[in-house]
View 1 (tube, one colour):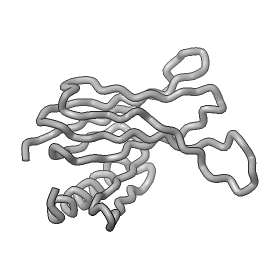
View 2 (cartoon, rainbow, N blue to C red):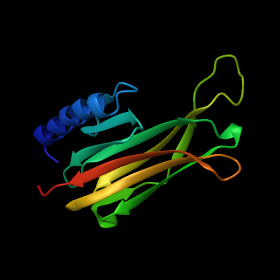
View 3 (cartoon, one colour):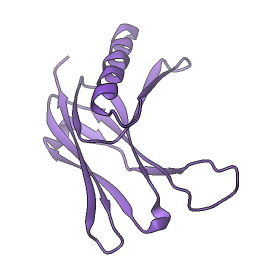
View 4 (cartoon, helix red, strand yellow):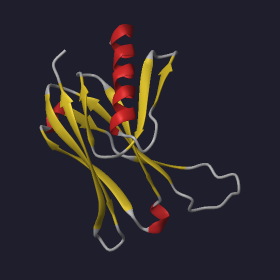
Length: 142
C-alpha cells in the first residue's frame, strides 16, 4: 500500500471514528518502521467503508473477572473481511488491584468487495446477551 493511500485511509478512518464511534476519540498512529497505521476505536454500532488490504482494530472495554464474556462474528459476505481472534489486555493498574477490567481487541482486514457486518456481543454469566454492537463494513474495489 503506497504512502498516500495509507495517509488517506488513516485520515478517513479517523474522521469516521470521531463521528461514528463518539463514545471515545479515535487514535490513529503511524509506525515509522513499518509505514503502517493502527486505528483504535471503542466499539459502538456504526458503519465504515474500507478498501481491500485496509486494516482496523475494533476495541471493546470489558472485565472478564465479572463473568461476562465478549465475542465477535461476521455476518453477510464473510469473504469481504477477515476478523482476527479477539485478545484481552488488562488496563494497567498502579495499585496492584486485580479485576480492574481492560479491553478486548479484534483486528479486521478488508479482503474483497462486499458488505459484511461485525457483530460483537457481551454475554452475562447466565448466557443472556446483554449488549450487541454491529459495525457494517463496506469493502469497495480499489
